[in-house]
Image (cartoon, rainbow, N blue to C red; front, side, top):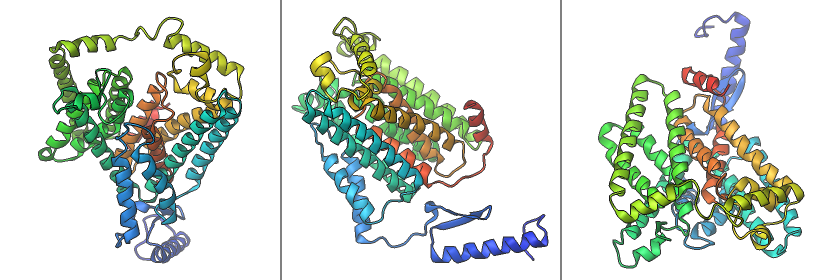
Length: 459
């Protein structure tokens, strides 16, 4: 029994040798099998040996990149990303570029229940056709979220980086377009890339344009923290472009989401850092970012139109928030309707019958659009994603730095849902699907010192 781990007796040694031999035979049959722990063989798709990809595989990866890279072009709906995503919903499972475990089955099952609640509510809606179309669009978003999640579960690191790189490209195009439009750097750009005097880039709504930047911004911060100092200038510069574009969107929700996302990311990156040097670098980056942001604000307010709009938008209460037809009165009406209609009232009914404005709170909207059943499942999924995601962060994994990006962006966007209707935001469902996909793919691992800090923070 030479080469046995220290402390094993002869009987335990025989069992150990048998397990190792069985695992080697299993790995020979299936190269995705990575390790044996406690007598259980654990699959780890990150360690799949590099093999020559088929043409279909390469084309599929290209389509995934293209779909995410065009997700920022939303002048109208349906957008180009919708056609590409619908194709991927069929293509990726057919060619085997997804991994559908029990976790992902539970995920899509819950979304299907939510869709059922929406269809039931559509049956009692004032305009059944409009409400049904809205629910069908929601179902498409649920399926897309599931397939993207199963896609990253197949090859977590490679596929997650593919998506984040494409998303950063999309955000870069949108942000640069927004700045070109806002400063009228090209003929006709202002009319095309701004809305109501606010930067919107390639989006039709500046309130969606800003939050779309959050995940790519956090990815750039991750690159700054992990790259050598000689290679951080480009991601730092692009991060500055994202922040400036979001500032000029004059969206209070976008400002809050970006600020909250950066704070959550910074905290999680700090407490899970594996060395003092990493933590010092995080503190230095956050301090530099705060100083640069302060300088950016100081420069911006020197321009009178920018200063006036900043002052107006920085107020917590706008003129359209108050009064009997304002946002707050509408939310009171929505709350009463939720209590009185367990089946819901169907999508679009609220603005056609009860109030001139949308609810501006996704957690009330889903209860109206999908009833207590569909709305309750939506609430459950958001809460479960936050809870399971935080639990997942307490486990050491090579994917944890990227997971923190997704989790921080999702948590901030979920919070923004309290002040705006995010139930048809594509990037919200993409973030949720990626989080579930990474949870589905990762094996259990023991906690380290950074994880114990998170355990204490979570109670």
